[in-house]
Image (cartoon, rainbow over all chains, first blue to last red; front, side):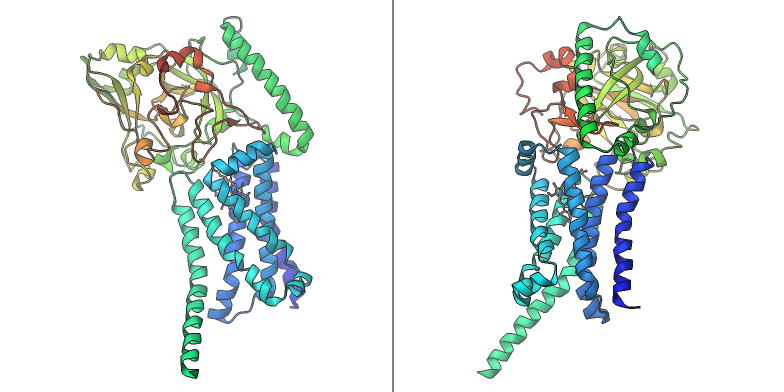
Length: 203
Length: 320
Ligand code: HEM
């Protein structure tokens, strides 16, 4: 199968959660508080796509499977579901009342974190086309996109903080995100150590 | 439900009537705003078709304390529940509590502590002396949503008078059944089981405070706290403890399950108060289940005329 066809399939599959939400809304399957359900579902899907995006590199390292061509789309779906999530909050929780929103961002720590997380997603979404990669240069682009690690940690913290008492589900995501970030950290330090060695030897 | 509401027209105290007008104004505003801002599709799907079963209690006394606001559909009241004894999400209780409480076992309620007439009662014996009323109350959850629920019950004060608390009785403490067999949520230590709640004596004696045994004219379902629960409409919902097995008169302030879980977040009083925020939820507004946009939350959930005097001179920010 040529890559474009696979990409099209992934594109459609990734829209299924949205379709599910819309069908649920139209057929009254979202429970007594549909707005809460939609806010939560969209937030969860943003986080799930984020985990998928972060899984691409470890999968290449450990299983030698190259899914890198799909990463950009997965990342953009993080942005897509996070945008939906944020708009539901702005529109249906706060009715676009700017002063209320600002107060809320300042007052409630989990909203503060959500806000910063979303803000960090914006430059990544903007620089996600080839033109921008070229303009920034591969190195700088790569550096910028390390923001993903911050986003992953911050959105897990956001989730952990908003849950009232039963922290099992956010902890599960925390474990998952840690498992995805740990190999990178390990490699980072290994490289540092080997670099140091090279320097010592050359002296 | 509408039939019951009509019967009471004309008997309403003036305060309730103004309240209703305000409510209508707000309703009109919300409806207009909704029409402008959202697709009609979304709106219509929020109006849930309710199948309300036939009432089984007969001769319920109506009450002047009831609100005229239209009750939240039966369907929503019985499927959207916080009852951690059946799991921490809102849907689990309705799914897991279908057989609760086990009809083959008697339900005992013990009344003890600082009182002259302690005793253990079978559920039927416990409620037999009391006249059951319908009380349509607003119900506000600490999470920022609310409902209007037609409860069936009797004033807690009636029960307290029979138990004859002595002069040491300063508080009433309530305990939910502890039985991980029947209440699977108790197998995980999400809260310090059993669930405990408490009221100050004057709060417990307030005529708004009821013990409820039903809603929508029928016996309580498991997910709503069958067979008997507390309803304190001017406090956040978690004060209205479910499936009670013990009522105890005590001298010192009881520490509730939520106070133990988060002393900074949940106080003993937990009166509905739009000006005292919770770290996770702003309390200034609430989403009435079934409505698209949020409405303003009222101090004491709008029951100030009946309960504000209980707290005169108290700093409600300190005693949250
Ligand atoms: C401006 C930015 C954001 C705001 C204002 C915001 C706000 C919220 C709100 C109000 C909730 C629901 C809380 C509740 O129902 O009790 C929520 C839940 C959630 N949000 Fe956000 N959020 C933001 C950004 C994000 C981002 C960027 C992510 C992930 C990438 C995210 C992931 C989640 C998750 C996973 C949940 C929990 C879903 C659940 O309870 O199952 N949020 N957020």
